[in-house]
Length: 479
Image (cartoon, rainbow, N blue to C red):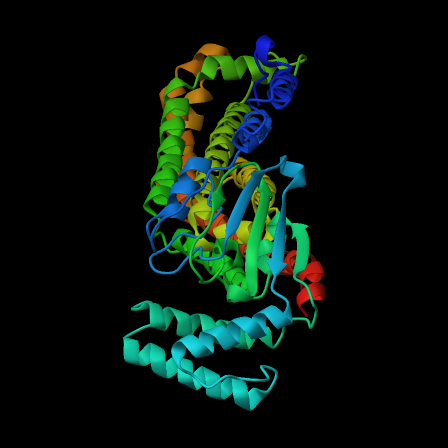
Protein backbone atom coordinates (compact mmCIF):
# COMPACT_ATOMS: atom_id res chain seq x y z
CA UNK A 1 0.00 0.00 0.00
CA UNK A 2 1.38 3.44 -0.93
CA UNK A 3 2.30 5.83 1.88
CA UNK A 4 -0.06 8.71 2.61
CA UNK A 5 0.80 12.23 1.57
CA UNK A 6 2.65 14.22 4.27
CA UNK A 7 -0.42 16.35 4.97
CA UNK A 8 -2.43 13.18 5.58
CA UNK A 9 -0.04 11.43 7.95
CA UNK A 10 -2.12 12.49 10.99
CA UNK A 11 -5.40 12.35 9.17
CA UNK A 12 -7.32 10.44 11.89
CA UNK A 13 -6.10 12.78 14.62
CA UNK A 14 -7.10 15.81 12.55
CA UNK A 15 -10.60 14.44 11.89
CA UNK A 16 -11.04 13.44 15.54
CA UNK A 17 -10.10 16.99 16.56
CA UNK A 18 -12.71 18.44 14.22
CA UNK A 19 -15.39 16.06 15.54
CA UNK A 20 -14.51 16.98 19.11
CA UNK A 21 -14.91 20.66 18.28
CA UNK A 22 -18.23 19.81 16.68
CA UNK A 23 -19.46 18.15 19.88
CA UNK A 24 -18.39 21.15 21.95
CA UNK A 25 -20.42 23.54 19.81
CA UNK A 26 -23.91 23.52 21.32
CA UNK A 27 -25.65 24.43 18.08
CA UNK A 28 -23.98 21.53 16.25
CA UNK A 29 -23.77 18.87 18.94
CA UNK A 30 -26.89 17.12 17.63
CA UNK A 31 -25.33 16.44 14.22
CA UNK A 32 -24.92 12.75 13.29
CA UNK A 33 -21.19 12.05 13.04
CA UNK A 34 -21.56 8.32 12.30
CA UNK A 35 -21.25 8.74 8.49
CA UNK A 36 -18.09 10.77 9.01
CA UNK A 37 -16.58 8.16 11.32
CA UNK A 38 -17.47 5.37 8.88
CA UNK A 39 -15.84 7.25 6.02
CA UNK A 40 -12.78 7.87 8.18
CA UNK A 41 -12.37 4.18 8.94
CA UNK A 42 -12.56 3.35 5.23
CA UNK A 43 -10.11 6.09 4.31
CA UNK A 44 -7.39 5.01 6.74
CA UNK A 45 -7.93 1.26 6.49
CA UNK A 46 -4.96 -0.66 4.99
CA UNK A 47 -7.49 -2.90 3.22
CA UNK A 48 -10.60 -2.39 1.14
CA UNK A 49 -13.16 -4.77 -0.29
CA UNK A 50 -14.26 -5.24 -3.88
CA UNK A 51 -17.54 -7.07 -4.26
CA UNK A 52 -18.22 -9.15 -7.36
CA UNK A 53 -21.93 -9.84 -7.66
CA UNK A 54 -24.01 -10.96 -10.58
CA UNK A 55 -26.62 -13.32 -11.90
CA UNK A 56 -26.36 -17.06 -12.22
CA UNK A 57 -23.45 -18.09 -14.52
CA UNK A 58 -22.64 -14.47 -15.34
CA UNK A 59 -18.88 -15.04 -15.41
CA UNK A 60 -17.86 -13.72 -11.98
CA UNK A 61 -15.31 -16.44 -11.31
CA UNK A 62 -13.91 -16.22 -14.83
CA UNK A 63 -13.41 -12.47 -14.43
CA UNK A 64 -11.65 -12.89 -11.06
CA UNK A 65 -9.37 -15.61 -12.42
CA UNK A 66 -8.45 -13.36 -15.34
CA UNK A 67 -7.72 -10.39 -13.07
CA UNK A 68 -5.59 -12.48 -10.72
CA UNK A 69 -3.92 -14.36 -13.60
CA UNK A 70 -4.51 -17.55 -11.65
CA UNK A 71 -7.13 -20.30 -11.89
CA UNK A 72 -8.20 -19.78 -8.31
CA UNK A 73 -11.96 -20.28 -8.61
CA UNK A 74 -13.80 -22.95 -10.55
CA UNK A 75 -15.33 -21.54 -13.71
CA UNK A 76 -17.79 -23.43 -15.91
CA UNK A 77 -21.25 -23.35 -17.41
CA UNK A 78 -24.03 -23.92 -14.92
CA UNK A 79 -23.51 -23.96 -11.14
CA UNK A 80 -19.85 -23.48 -10.36
CA UNK A 81 -18.52 -21.19 -7.59
CA UNK A 82 -21.59 -21.06 -5.42
CA UNK A 83 -20.23 -20.89 -1.89
CA UNK A 84 -19.53 -17.41 -0.56
CA UNK A 85 -15.80 -16.82 -1.11
CA UNK A 86 -13.56 -14.18 0.38
CA UNK A 87 -10.12 -13.79 -1.20
CA UNK A 88 -7.55 -11.87 0.80
CA UNK A 89 -3.93 -11.01 0.21
CA UNK A 90 -1.20 -13.08 1.87
CA UNK A 91 2.46 -13.79 1.23
CA UNK A 92 3.05 -17.06 -0.68
CA UNK A 93 4.42 -18.84 2.38
CA UNK A 94 1.29 -17.85 4.36
CA UNK A 95 -1.26 -19.19 1.89
CA UNK A 96 -4.13 -20.99 3.62
CA UNK A 97 -7.81 -21.87 3.37
CA UNK A 98 -10.35 -21.24 6.14
CA UNK A 99 -13.64 -23.18 5.99
CA UNK A 100 -16.69 -22.26 8.03
CA UNK A 101 -19.32 -24.98 8.50
CA UNK A 102 -22.86 -24.80 9.80
CA UNK A 103 -23.58 -26.43 13.12
CA UNK A 104 -25.89 -29.43 13.14
CA UNK A 105 -28.69 -27.33 14.60
CA UNK A 106 -28.32 -24.79 11.77
CA UNK A 107 -28.39 -27.58 9.20
CA UNK A 108 -31.60 -28.99 10.72
CA UNK A 109 -33.17 -25.51 10.69
CA UNK A 110 -32.31 -25.07 7.01
CA UNK A 111 -33.75 -28.50 6.19
CA UNK A 112 -37.04 -27.62 7.94
CA UNK A 113 -37.25 -24.29 6.10
CA UNK A 114 -36.62 -25.82 2.68
CA UNK A 115 -39.10 -28.64 3.34
CA UNK A 116 -41.74 -26.04 4.12
CA UNK A 117 -40.97 -24.02 0.99
CA UNK A 118 -41.14 -27.11 -1.21
CA UNK A 119 -44.23 -28.57 0.42
CA UNK A 120 -42.42 -31.68 1.63
CA UNK A 121 -43.01 -33.49 4.90
CA UNK A 122 -40.57 -32.26 7.57
CA UNK A 123 -37.80 -34.66 8.52
CA UNK A 124 -37.56 -34.53 12.30
CA UNK A 125 -34.37 -36.58 12.50
CA UNK A 126 -31.88 -36.10 9.69
CA UNK A 127 -29.73 -38.91 11.14
CA UNK A 128 -32.24 -41.60 10.13
CA UNK A 129 -31.47 -43.42 6.90
CA UNK A 130 -35.10 -44.04 5.94
CA UNK A 131 -36.05 -40.40 6.53
CA UNK A 132 -33.18 -39.16 4.37
CA UNK A 133 -34.04 -41.60 1.59
CA UNK A 134 -37.67 -40.43 1.61
CA UNK A 135 -36.58 -36.79 1.51
CA UNK A 136 -34.15 -37.49 -1.36
CA UNK A 137 -36.90 -39.18 -3.36
CA UNK A 138 -39.15 -36.17 -2.91
CA UNK A 139 -36.39 -33.80 -4.04
CA UNK A 140 -35.57 -35.94 -7.09
CA UNK A 141 -39.24 -35.93 -8.08
CA UNK A 142 -39.34 -32.13 -7.88
CA UNK A 143 -36.13 -31.77 -9.96
CA UNK A 144 -37.51 -34.19 -12.55
CA UNK A 145 -40.84 -32.37 -12.78
CA UNK A 146 -39.08 -29.02 -13.19
CA UNK A 147 -36.97 -30.35 -16.07
CA UNK A 148 -33.59 -30.31 -14.33
CA UNK A 149 -31.84 -29.07 -11.21
CA UNK A 150 -31.00 -25.66 -12.71
CA UNK A 151 -34.25 -25.03 -14.58
CA UNK A 152 -36.14 -23.22 -11.81
CA UNK A 153 -35.74 -21.79 -8.34
CA UNK A 154 -37.85 -24.65 -6.97
CA UNK A 155 -35.52 -27.22 -8.55
CA UNK A 156 -32.48 -25.40 -7.18
CA UNK A 157 -33.96 -25.48 -3.69
CA UNK A 158 -34.66 -29.20 -4.03
CA UNK A 159 -31.05 -29.78 -5.04
CA UNK A 160 -29.85 -27.69 -2.09
CA UNK A 161 -32.13 -29.61 0.30
CA UNK A 162 -30.62 -32.89 -0.88
CA UNK A 163 -27.15 -31.56 -0.12
CA UNK A 164 -28.20 -30.26 3.30
CA UNK A 165 -29.81 -33.53 4.31
CA UNK A 166 -27.05 -35.85 3.14
CA UNK A 167 -24.20 -33.76 4.52
CA UNK A 168 -26.05 -32.72 7.64
CA UNK A 169 -25.93 -36.31 8.84
CA UNK A 170 -22.12 -36.11 8.87
CA UNK A 171 -21.93 -32.67 10.52
CA UNK A 172 -20.64 -32.62 14.08
CA UNK A 173 -23.28 -32.06 16.74
CA UNK A 174 -22.00 -28.73 17.99
CA UNK A 175 -23.92 -25.66 19.07
CA UNK A 176 -21.82 -23.26 17.04
CA UNK A 177 -20.29 -23.04 13.62
CA UNK A 178 -17.11 -24.97 12.95
CA UNK A 179 -13.96 -23.44 11.42
CA UNK A 180 -11.11 -25.42 9.90
CA UNK A 181 -7.85 -24.01 8.59
CA UNK A 182 -5.20 -25.76 6.49
CA UNK A 183 -2.57 -24.93 3.82
CA UNK A 184 -4.00 -23.70 0.54
CA UNK A 185 -2.67 -26.56 -1.62
CA UNK A 186 -4.46 -29.10 0.61
CA UNK A 187 -7.82 -27.67 -0.43
CA UNK A 188 -8.11 -30.06 -3.33
CA UNK A 189 -7.98 -32.97 -0.91
CA UNK A 190 -11.28 -32.20 0.83
CA UNK A 191 -14.04 -34.78 0.19
CA UNK A 192 -16.63 -33.61 -2.32
CA UNK A 193 -19.36 -32.48 -2.46
CA UNK A 194 -19.70 -30.51 0.80
CA UNK A 195 -22.33 -28.26 -0.77
CA UNK A 196 -24.12 -25.74 1.41
CA UNK A 197 -23.07 -27.18 4.76
CA UNK A 198 -20.03 -25.03 4.04
CA UNK A 199 -21.24 -21.47 4.48
CA UNK A 200 -18.04 -19.54 3.86
CA UNK A 201 -14.67 -20.09 2.30
CA UNK A 202 -11.74 -17.75 2.91
CA UNK A 203 -8.63 -17.96 0.73
CA UNK A 204 -5.43 -16.39 1.99
CA UNK A 205 -3.24 -16.09 -1.09
CA UNK A 206 -1.31 -13.53 -3.21
CA UNK A 207 -4.56 -12.01 -4.51
CA UNK A 208 -7.37 -9.70 -3.31
CA UNK A 209 -11.38 -9.46 -3.86
CA UNK A 210 -14.62 -10.84 -2.47
CA UNK A 211 -17.20 -13.06 -4.15
CA UNK A 212 -20.73 -14.04 -3.07
CA UNK A 213 -23.12 -16.16 -5.16
CA UNK A 214 -25.96 -18.69 -4.97
CA UNK A 215 -26.05 -22.16 -3.37
CA UNK A 216 -24.09 -24.77 -5.33
CA UNK A 217 -20.84 -26.81 -5.24
CA UNK A 218 -17.41 -25.51 -4.28
CA UNK A 219 -14.51 -23.94 -6.25
CA UNK A 220 -12.27 -25.89 -8.58
CA UNK A 221 -9.81 -27.08 -5.99
CA UNK A 222 -12.67 -28.86 -4.17
CA UNK A 223 -13.72 -30.73 -7.29
CA UNK A 224 -13.15 -34.48 -7.00
CA UNK A 225 -10.34 -36.00 -8.98
CA UNK A 226 -9.01 -39.52 -8.69
CA UNK A 227 -5.26 -39.28 -8.24
CA UNK A 228 -5.07 -42.87 -9.43
CA UNK A 229 -6.71 -41.85 -12.71
CA UNK A 230 -4.35 -38.89 -13.05
CA UNK A 231 -1.22 -41.01 -12.56
CA UNK A 232 -2.60 -43.58 -15.01
CA UNK A 233 -3.06 -40.79 -17.56
CA UNK A 234 0.53 -39.69 -16.96
CA UNK A 235 1.90 -43.21 -17.50
CA UNK A 236 -0.24 -43.61 -20.61
CA UNK A 237 1.02 -40.28 -21.97
CA UNK A 238 4.66 -41.27 -21.52
CA UNK A 239 4.00 -44.72 -23.03
CA UNK A 240 2.36 -43.09 -26.07
CA UNK A 241 5.27 -40.68 -26.53
CA UNK A 242 7.75 -43.56 -26.43
CA UNK A 243 5.65 -45.67 -28.77
CA UNK A 244 5.52 -42.81 -31.26
CA UNK A 245 9.32 -42.88 -31.34
CA UNK A 246 9.63 -46.67 -31.55
CA UNK A 247 7.10 -46.95 -34.38
CA UNK A 248 8.57 -43.98 -36.30
CA UNK A 249 5.22 -42.16 -35.98
CA UNK A 250 6.60 -38.92 -34.52
CA UNK A 251 7.34 -36.63 -37.45
CA UNK A 252 9.57 -34.25 -35.52
CA UNK A 253 11.61 -37.06 -34.02
CA UNK A 254 11.97 -38.66 -37.45
CA UNK A 255 13.13 -35.33 -38.83
CA UNK A 256 15.76 -35.14 -36.06
CA UNK A 257 16.94 -38.68 -36.76
CA UNK A 258 17.10 -38.05 -40.50
CA UNK A 259 19.22 -35.03 -39.65
CA UNK A 260 21.57 -37.32 -37.71
CA UNK A 261 21.85 -39.66 -40.70
CA UNK A 262 22.48 -36.80 -43.09
CA UNK A 263 25.19 -35.32 -40.84
CA UNK A 264 26.99 -38.67 -40.57
CA UNK A 265 26.94 -39.24 -44.35
CA UNK A 266 27.99 -35.67 -45.09
CA UNK A 267 30.81 -35.80 -42.54
CA UNK A 268 32.16 -39.09 -43.95
CA UNK A 269 32.19 -37.66 -47.47
CA UNK A 270 33.87 -34.52 -46.18
CA UNK A 271 36.54 -36.50 -44.29
CA UNK A 272 37.31 -38.69 -47.32
CA UNK A 273 37.49 -35.73 -49.71
CA UNK A 274 39.90 -33.83 -47.45
CA UNK A 275 41.96 -36.81 -46.27
CA UNK A 276 45.68 -36.08 -46.72
CA UNK A 277 48.08 -38.99 -47.17
CA UNK A 278 51.05 -36.63 -46.71
CA UNK A 279 49.84 -35.50 -43.24
CA UNK A 280 49.03 -39.07 -42.25
CA UNK A 281 52.48 -40.25 -43.41
CA UNK A 282 54.07 -37.61 -41.17
CA UNK A 283 52.08 -38.79 -38.14
CA UNK A 284 53.02 -42.40 -38.84
CA UNK A 285 56.78 -41.72 -39.11
CA UNK A 286 56.65 -39.39 -36.10
CA UNK A 287 55.43 -42.29 -34.00
CA UNK A 288 58.53 -44.31 -34.98
CA UNK A 289 61.61 -42.04 -34.83
CA UNK A 290 64.05 -44.83 -35.76
CA UNK A 291 62.35 -45.46 -39.11
CA UNK A 292 62.54 -43.31 -42.24
CA UNK A 293 59.61 -44.87 -44.08
CA UNK A 294 56.09 -46.16 -43.35
CA UNK A 295 54.08 -49.04 -44.85
CA UNK A 296 50.62 -48.77 -46.38
CA UNK A 297 49.21 -50.58 -43.33
CA UNK A 298 50.50 -47.77 -41.06
CA UNK A 299 48.80 -45.15 -43.24
CA UNK A 300 45.53 -47.09 -43.14
CA UNK A 301 45.73 -47.52 -39.34
CA UNK A 302 46.22 -43.79 -38.78
CA UNK A 303 43.44 -43.01 -41.26
CA UNK A 304 40.99 -45.45 -39.67
CA UNK A 305 41.52 -44.02 -36.17
CA UNK A 306 41.14 -40.49 -37.52
CA UNK A 307 37.89 -41.20 -39.40
CA UNK A 308 36.36 -43.21 -36.53
CA UNK A 309 37.07 -40.47 -33.96
CA UNK A 310 35.76 -37.68 -36.20
CA UNK A 311 32.54 -39.61 -36.89
CA UNK A 312 32.18 -40.31 -33.17
CA UNK A 313 32.10 -36.57 -32.46
CA UNK A 314 29.26 -36.12 -34.94
CA UNK A 315 27.23 -39.07 -33.63
CA UNK A 316 27.64 -37.97 -30.00
CA UNK A 317 26.65 -34.38 -30.78
CA UNK A 318 23.66 -35.43 -32.91
CA UNK A 319 22.46 -37.89 -30.25
CA UNK A 320 22.55 -35.18 -27.62
CA UNK A 321 20.53 -32.90 -29.89
CA UNK A 322 17.91 -35.59 -30.57
CA UNK A 323 17.41 -36.17 -26.83
CA UNK A 324 17.26 -32.44 -26.06
CA UNK A 325 14.63 -31.86 -28.76
CA UNK A 326 12.53 -34.83 -27.62
CA UNK A 327 12.48 -33.72 -23.99
CA UNK A 328 11.80 -30.12 -24.99
CA UNK A 329 8.67 -31.26 -26.82
CA UNK A 330 7.74 -33.48 -23.88
CA UNK A 331 8.19 -30.62 -21.41
CA UNK A 332 6.01 -28.43 -23.63
CA UNK A 333 3.20 -31.01 -23.81
CA UNK A 334 3.06 -32.25 -20.22
CA UNK A 335 2.04 -28.91 -18.58
CA UNK A 336 -0.88 -28.71 -21.02
CA UNK A 337 -2.20 -32.13 -19.99
CA UNK A 338 -5.14 -32.36 -17.59
CA UNK A 339 -3.30 -34.75 -15.27
CA UNK A 340 -0.53 -32.17 -14.79
CA UNK A 341 -3.06 -29.49 -13.85
CA UNK A 342 -4.61 -31.94 -11.37
CA UNK A 343 -1.20 -32.66 -9.83
CA UNK A 344 -0.80 -28.95 -9.21
CA UNK A 345 -4.33 -28.60 -7.90
CA UNK A 346 -4.13 -31.52 -5.49
CA UNK A 347 -0.49 -31.26 -4.40
CA UNK A 348 0.23 -27.56 -4.76
CA UNK A 349 3.03 -28.36 -7.22
CA UNK A 350 3.84 -30.90 -9.95
CA UNK A 351 5.11 -33.50 -7.52
CA UNK A 352 8.70 -32.95 -8.69
CA UNK A 353 7.84 -34.08 -12.23
CA UNK A 354 9.67 -31.27 -14.02
CA UNK A 355 12.82 -31.85 -11.98
CA UNK A 356 12.71 -35.61 -12.58
CA UNK A 357 12.27 -35.12 -16.32
CA UNK A 358 15.32 -32.86 -16.33
CA UNK A 359 17.35 -35.55 -14.55
CA UNK A 360 16.03 -38.22 -16.91
CA UNK A 361 17.03 -36.14 -19.92
CA UNK A 362 20.60 -36.12 -18.66
CA UNK A 363 20.50 -39.89 -18.09
CA UNK A 364 19.12 -40.67 -21.55
CA UNK A 365 21.55 -38.25 -23.17
CA UNK A 366 24.49 -39.82 -21.35
CA UNK A 367 23.35 -43.32 -22.26
CA UNK A 368 23.09 -42.47 -25.96
CA UNK A 369 26.38 -40.60 -26.02
CA UNK A 370 28.13 -43.60 -24.48
CA UNK A 371 26.41 -45.88 -26.99
CA UNK A 372 27.56 -43.58 -29.81
CA UNK A 373 31.17 -43.83 -28.60
CA UNK A 374 31.00 -47.61 -28.46
CA UNK A 375 29.40 -47.76 -31.91
CA UNK A 376 32.08 -45.61 -33.54
CA UNK A 377 34.88 -47.35 -31.67
CA UNK A 378 33.93 -50.48 -33.62
CA UNK A 379 34.66 -48.63 -36.86
CA UNK A 380 38.36 -49.14 -36.08
CA UNK A 381 38.06 -52.87 -36.70
CA UNK A 382 37.98 -54.17 -40.27
CA UNK A 383 34.71 -55.44 -41.68
CA UNK A 384 34.56 -59.27 -41.68
CA UNK A 385 34.05 -59.45 -45.44
CA UNK A 386 36.47 -56.68 -46.39
CA UNK A 387 39.25 -59.14 -47.31
CA UNK A 388 37.01 -61.88 -48.77
CA UNK A 389 38.25 -63.28 -52.05
CA UNK A 390 36.38 -62.04 -55.07
CA UNK A 391 35.28 -58.75 -53.44
CA UNK A 392 36.10 -55.37 -54.91
CA UNK A 393 37.57 -54.28 -51.57
CA UNK A 394 40.30 -56.94 -51.62
CA UNK A 395 41.01 -56.16 -55.27
CA UNK A 396 41.34 -52.43 -54.43
CA UNK A 397 43.62 -53.22 -51.49
CA UNK A 398 45.96 -55.31 -53.64
CA UNK A 399 46.09 -52.68 -56.37
CA UNK A 400 46.88 -49.96 -53.82
CA UNK A 401 49.53 -52.10 -52.13
CA UNK A 402 51.17 -52.78 -55.49
CA UNK A 403 51.24 -49.05 -56.30
CA UNK A 404 52.71 -47.94 -52.93
CA UNK A 405 55.37 -50.68 -52.79
CA UNK A 406 57.21 -49.41 -55.87
CA UNK A 407 59.42 -47.10 -53.78
CA UNK A 408 60.27 -46.27 -50.14
CA UNK A 409 59.78 -42.50 -50.06
CA UNK A 410 56.74 -40.42 -49.09
CA UNK A 411 56.09 -39.35 -52.66
CA UNK A 412 55.17 -42.85 -53.81
CA UNK A 413 52.59 -43.04 -51.02
CA UNK A 414 51.14 -39.60 -51.81
CA UNK A 415 50.73 -40.56 -55.47
CA UNK A 416 48.38 -43.34 -54.32
CA UNK A 417 46.17 -40.91 -52.35
CA UNK A 418 43.10 -41.43 -54.59
CA UNK A 419 43.40 -45.18 -54.30
CA UNK A 420 43.81 -44.99 -50.52
CA UNK A 421 40.73 -42.73 -50.23
CA UNK A 422 38.76 -45.23 -52.28
CA UNK A 423 39.95 -48.04 -50.05
CA UNK A 424 38.83 -46.15 -46.91
CA UNK A 425 35.48 -45.41 -48.52
CA UNK A 426 34.93 -49.10 -49.22
CA UNK A 427 35.65 -49.84 -45.56
CA UNK A 428 33.67 -47.03 -43.87
CA UNK A 429 30.56 -46.62 -45.99
CA UNK A 430 29.06 -50.02 -45.04
CA UNK A 431 29.90 -49.44 -41.36
CA UNK A 432 28.25 -46.00 -41.23
CA UNK A 433 25.27 -47.26 -43.22
CA UNK A 434 24.77 -50.13 -40.77
CA UNK A 435 24.97 -47.76 -37.81
CA UNK A 436 22.58 -45.07 -38.98
CA UNK A 437 20.24 -47.47 -40.77
CA UNK A 438 19.89 -50.26 -38.20
CA UNK A 439 21.90 -50.56 -35.01
CA UNK A 440 21.86 -47.03 -33.60
CA UNK A 441 18.16 -46.50 -34.18
CA UNK A 442 17.48 -49.69 -32.24
CA UNK A 443 19.76 -48.42 -29.47
CA UNK A 444 17.77 -45.18 -29.33
CA UNK A 445 14.44 -47.03 -29.20
CA UNK A 446 15.61 -49.32 -26.42
CA UNK A 447 17.12 -46.45 -24.44
CA UNK A 448 13.87 -44.51 -24.52
CA UNK A 449 11.82 -47.55 -23.49
CA UNK A 450 14.12 -48.68 -20.70
CA UNK A 451 14.54 -45.17 -19.29
CA UNK A 452 11.18 -43.41 -19.72
CA UNK A 453 8.69 -46.20 -18.98
CA UNK A 454 10.19 -47.18 -15.60
CA UNK A 455 10.47 -43.49 -14.68
CA UNK A 456 6.75 -43.00 -15.36
CA UNK A 457 5.92 -46.01 -13.18
CA UNK A 458 8.16 -44.92 -10.31
CA UNK A 459 7.02 -41.31 -10.52
CA UNK A 460 3.36 -42.33 -10.44
CA UNK A 461 3.88 -44.28 -7.23
CA UNK A 462 5.82 -41.36 -5.76
CA UNK A 463 3.05 -38.89 -6.54
CA UNK A 464 0.45 -41.20 -5.01
CA UNK A 465 2.53 -41.35 -1.84
CA UNK A 466 2.86 -37.56 -1.76
CA UNK A 467 -0.88 -37.26 -2.22
CA UNK A 468 -1.62 -39.67 0.62
CA UNK A 469 0.78 -37.82 2.91
CA UNK A 470 -0.64 -34.40 2.01
CA UNK A 471 -4.20 -35.64 2.45
CA UNK A 472 -3.59 -37.04 5.94
CA UNK A 473 -4.33 -33.84 7.96
CA UNK A 474 -7.50 -33.19 5.98
CA UNK A 475 -8.75 -36.77 6.24
CA UNK A 476 -8.08 -36.61 9.98
CA UNK A 477 -10.67 -33.85 10.23
CA UNK A 478 -13.28 -35.13 7.79
CA UNK A 479 -12.93 -38.81 8.57
